[in-house]
Image (cartoon, rainbow, N blue to C red; front, top):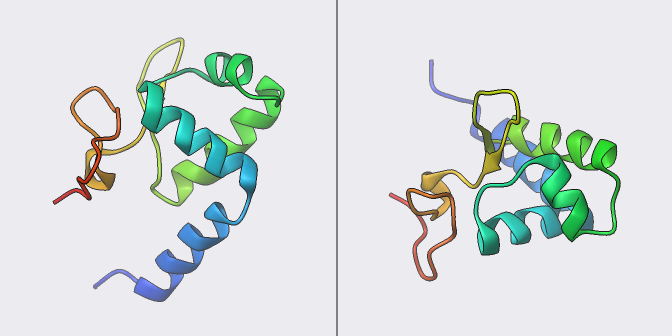
Length: 94
């Protein structure tokens, strides 16, 4: 069964409406993978708030989490990131 494109689009656009989530994505794109603690150090947001925002971004497919004790998140390659999770200018993914 094909994915519900409308539901996916709604989830992505809902995730992108929040300026904090856009700032998180911008930080990941600029600096590569980071933990919630790393992002809280860079942004004026608590680690707990970052974690909640990352959950919504992950559900929308906009970030992926690495397994491990200190889970780092990255921008997926399908969204234009290189192998290290850093955005590549002009690259929109496959």
